[in-house]
Length: 135
Image (cartoon, rainbow, N blue to C red):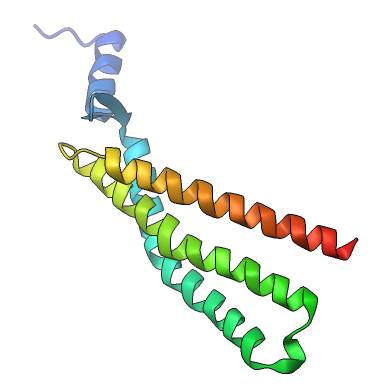
């Protein structure tokens, strides 16, 4: 006779939703959120690059747009374009490696953290320059 108590059902459902990867246990909802993040970043990444390059080109080519504020905004557009070129693709690669399992994610993770830190620091410096210029 089968024992169908509530404790057995919760243990079974927990075992079904756990996914083991890289010596860590990920819940199925975490795996789904990783897949959504990969899809979202893959769609948004080209738009980030193209639209920020258009801002840079507009400020560079139109002399009427070459004010101090617009030049500083173009500098911010450079850091945003670098985010689309470096940070988002390395995040996508790192997350795909984590989902596939069995592949070492150390290099992709370190590259992502390096690019993320550099671009964040650069963007923060540009914002500080904008605030100093306004004051």
